[in-house]
Image 1 (tube, helix red, strand yellow):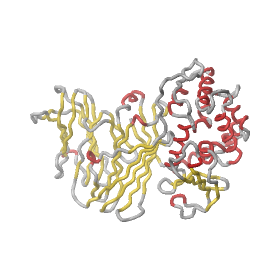
Image 2 (cartoon, rainbow, N blue to C red):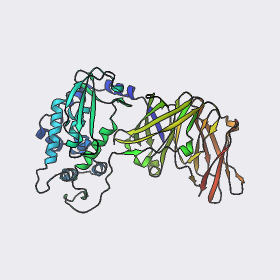
Image 3 (cartoon, rainbow, N blue to C red):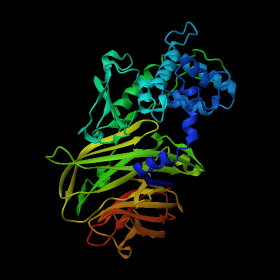
Image 4 (cartoon, rainbow, N blue to C red):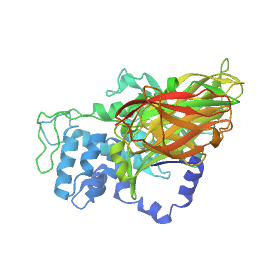
Length: 483
């Protein structure tokens, strides 16, 4: 299991350079027509390739559990049944087959194709996605100067205003909000979030409005789709899983909440079961974007850092995800002092975001080692040696099972000969460990100490795992259970 870190800007530029002319030509097909009937015929007509229907504009409004059901289908007959069920549960009036919502949806797609000529074109553009999902801006759209507008600094752009009091699906939940698009070139616009993410970043409030809208338009939440059965209004509960915003757990009690020697540590923990994994060759991949902003106490602005992580899981590890967590810490250079830190982890595909804000301190002296985390799976951020691990603070180990121990070290570089890991029973007797491998991902005086070992043969029960690092640092302990 691995985590890979990549560079957003370089990856984006490379992708643009590799776009073939044939792809641009393909956008002139029926999916980009400016007539709603032709667009719907292209995606759902008798000659349509229904296997790719979920890659069309409906991708913007599909709920997670609907997408899961769609991917299980393997026949055209079942796919057509699903499409009927999909639109039917969004039909405001189930007494006829008019399907007003479907008609309005494809009218918005056709309008986007007609108006937005950038690349990607029409409904695939950033402006197209907002228009298709939220509809026309209730407060209008206007061309404005974005000079000095935070991270959206540009000569020109577009500002769309939405008054949620006039939006039936989100009325009263957000108030007034704006959507900014930076003009990167002639008729070339891209979404922008001015405070942290900049150009290409989707503001959290926009994603929230889309989430609420996509959920609200489903007027029938009780009918389950069953392949081979005509869509009806049965009473079967379905769990609705949609893009959302969650609190980002920051386990300060375990990691410690301070930096040392010019480095601040921002610990992060989030449940892996909430991630959306995609097929990636022989593995499953979940992609994350991480933004961290630090503001010195008493200041109004501060630097921010962006990371891209790709959590890669082999098929044999898939079952371990459900109960596990992604645990890591970001080490950022910072002078001595106190900071207000904002951390945000975003999964771009599903729109799910985790956010946290809190104070952290950087001290000018002392050494420290955090209590170790114990788990059976190890994740590496390969670019710079950062480490994350699966599992909880109280590790559950099976006799003879390889396991990993991760502890953050601050203020010194531990020497392998000084590092000692031991398992102690209730009487204080030491139980020998085999297969010890020691690695320190130095982060400039602060980094993860990783030890791999094999769980000992011992009577099932609870034990104490003690870590010594030398260099004058006090030993640290954590509780484990051997089964």
